[in-house]
Image (cartoon, rainbow, N blue to C red):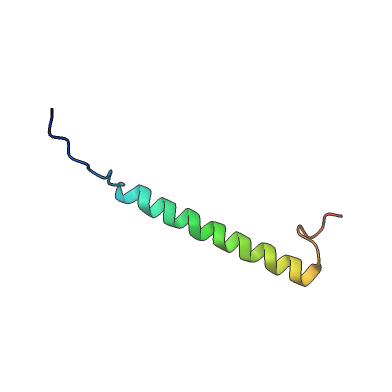
Length: 48
């Protein structure tokens, strides 16, 4: 039987930064959606 080691894959530095930036952008988008809804009463202001 082979000696198997369990290694966790390491993300590249650029990918980790991109994922953090993507999460930040999604958070800002959600806050903008909530702010627009609270101020105008519409999810997408200008439509309907």
